[in-house]
Length: 246
Ligand code: ZN
Image 1 (cartoon, rainbow, N blue to C red):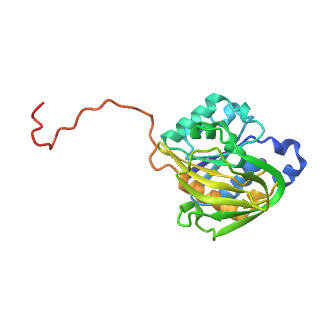
Image 2 (image 1 turned 90 degrees about the horizontal axis):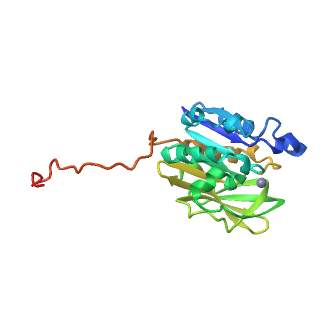
Image 3 (image 1 turned 90 degrees about the vertical axis):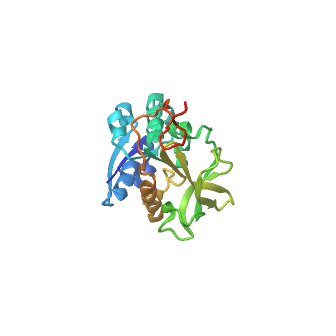
C-alpha cells in the first residue's frame, strides 16, 4: 500500500463561492476521493490550520507520498515544517507539487531557485502534450489531453532543468510551459504538475486524475533511509592481491 498525505492550505474554498461550488469539501478531499478509489493507495488529508500544518514527525514518517496544494498562504507554513518535508524527501519520501505549489516553501527548498513564472487568468483552453510517452506518469494518456479552462502559466519557469520532462502545456495565447517535471533529490522523487487552478474544475478532469494517480505510484519510495549521513569508512582490503601491505 502507498500511504498518501494531501496537504491543502484550504483557504480559497472558505471565502470564494465559485471555488466552493467546484470543491465543496475542499481541493484536498476532491483529490482524496479519486485517489482513494485505488486498492493500492491509502489517503489522509491535512490543512494549513492543523497543528504544524498536520505535518508532524509522525505523519511525515508514515507518509510515502506527500501531495501539496497551496497559493495564498505559502508564507504561513512554518519554516520548520518546510524543512521537515525537504529532509523527508531527501530520505526517500515522494513529493508532488500541484499548480501554485511552485511557490511553496518545500518545493523552493528542493529546487533551490525562485520557481518564478509568468501567468494570466483568462480561462484559456490548455492542451497538455506528452513529451515522454514511455514514462510511467504518462501511461494511459494519449499524445495529449485537454483542459477546458486553466490559468495560463508560461515560460520562463525558473526551475532547475528537470531530470525528465513528461508534459508540456500549450495555451490559446500561444504560451508554452513545462507542465510535468520530474526530479530526484537524493533518495526521494519529486514531480511538479502545473494544472489545478482553484476556480477551474481541473481536479475533476479524468486525465488530470490519471496523471496524479500515476505520479503517486512513480514517486513512492524506492529506497528510504532513516537518517542522512556522511560516514567515515574503513578501506575494504579483502580479496585484493597484496592487501597484507599497509
Ligand atoms: Zn492558480
